[in-house]
Each structure stands twice: as C-alpha cells, then as structure tokens.
Amino acid sequence: MRFAITTIIGALTLAGCVQNADYQAQRDAQARRELASALGDRVPGKPQDCINPGFTDGPQIIDTRTLVYRQGARLYRNDLASECPSLAPLSTVIVEMRGSQLCRNDQFRVVTPGMSIPSGYCRLGKFTPYTRAKGG
Image (cartoon, rainbow, N blue to C red; front, side, top):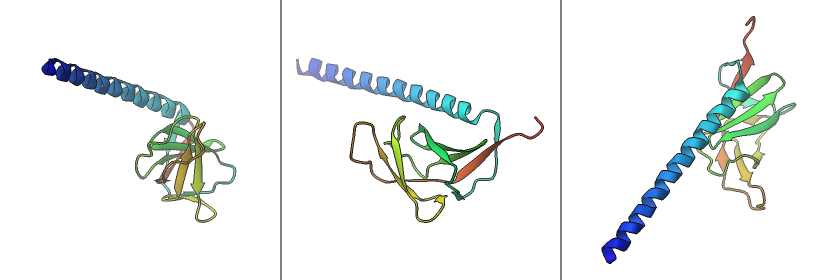
C-alpha cells in the first residue's frame, strides 16, 4: 500500500512538472511573438547605457527578462541584468532613477494587479535602439 501511494505521488509530481514545462514553453512562444510584433521590421543599433525618459512610452512587458520602451518611431529593447520573476502583463513597473535619465543598473520594482506590496528589486540592462531600415 505504501508503495502504491508513493508511486501515485511521484506520478502526480511528474505530471505537474510536465504541465509546468508546457506552460513555460507556451509563455516563451507568446513572448517571442510579442517581441517580433513590437519590433516589426526595425533593425537594432548599438546598445547604450541610458535613454532620455521624456516622451517615452512604456515599458511594454514582454517577459521576465525583456522590456520595450517607445520613443516615437524608435523602440528600445531592454534585456534585464537578470530575470525578474514578478514581471507579467498588466503589472506596473516602478523605476528608481538616480539621475535625469533611465539607465542600465537602475533598480525597479513590480506591482501586480490587485496587490499593494511591490516585488523585490530588479535591475535594468542595456538599451538597444531599434529603428526602421532606411530606403527599405
């Protein structure tokens, strides 16, 4: 009897892992589609440490490692310094800027809808500008 219970628990645990892996694969595929849709036919430029936050929309949360900021026709892809597990669609990103620009290593926290306590700190990475190809 003990063997049967252990086997059932093991099977349920394995099934949970498979479902989690399937869910993560679906989230990753969705994130790739959203990023491709946001960037469109734009081409990347040289990554930079800071951007001017004036006239900037965003961020658009792509996944737990990627944010997109818009400045008119130009987009800035920010690949975070490390994963920020709290990032999810509809979350609010609260950045603690240390100057007049939004920069690599600035820290931010995430507030999830329905919650009032922000997440732990996450850090911004470099900003890669994306612009439309000229003469295309």
